[in-house]
Length: 117
Image (tube, one colour):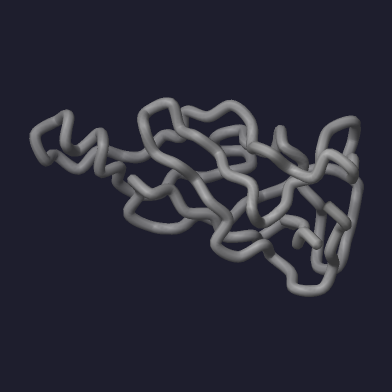
C-alpha cells in the first residue's frame, strides 16, 4: 500500500536547508486534499525552494545561495493509480534535482488514504 501525497505535504531536499510545503493543483481529492501526480514538480508552483542550497553554497565558496529547484518529474509514482493521465504521487517517490540534490516526501499531507501499488 502506498500513501498518496496531497496538498500541504512536506518535502525535503538533501541539499536544502529547510523543508517545503507542496501545493497541488487539480481536481482529484483524497482524504485531506488534492492528490498529486508525477508531474506535480513545477518549481514555485508545486514546490517552493528549500531556503539555502548547500551544493550551490559550496560552488560559491560558502556564500548562502537561494535554492531554486531544477527538477523534472517524480519517480516512480503509483502507475496503477492515475491522477489526470499520469501516475499518482506517493510517499516513496523521489525527485532528482539537476543541481545534485534529491527531494523526498517527509510527510504526505494525510494519513488515511492508501493506494494498492
